[in-house]
Image (cartoon, rainbow, N blue to C red; front, side, top):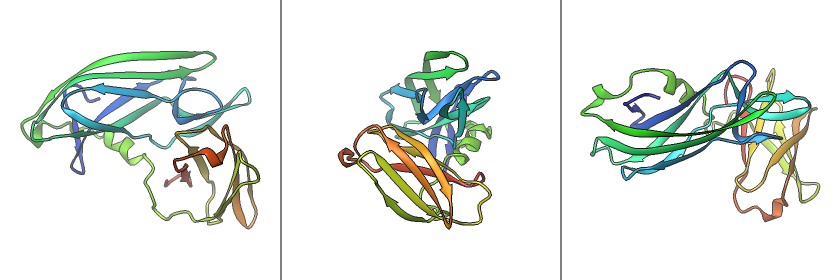
Length: 219
């Protein structure tokens, strides 16, 4: 989405990948949890220099004792495009791979043609659906949560201690490009402590670990 148009917001150009799911079906965040697979997007276009997939805040699900992180009903993944806007056109092919699961999992592979041009801002998409999901994407460094401490008991575990605030609920989702991180436990005392387990030794990781933290309203 949208068809034959692009969306402009804060001087950036966006497309969106909309996945509508029947009741009981789910698709996945960039860290899918204990099962599943994240969406994979490739764009072949001489008009697009780079692109970034934005991942809206997900939810955690437990099915048959398996924890997954993702979406149900409907989700739009906004795609921020790096282009030369002076050209006022985009053409190419977008390839999309994602997984949907219920009692069984089905891989979905699609290719879509991109062929969009515009003269001025009046030609941009005016719907609010992409903006809604841009706003659902977690923001960096809002200083809403304070990390008191981070420590490891061994090479494959990580404990994160957050300062306890006046939160009715708190959600946390870890992500690493190099390992799978699974939330093993959480406890609330004077602070809030989360324990994670990594598939690989944390000492071998080269890139920072990302944590998405939400109080159910803000992330």
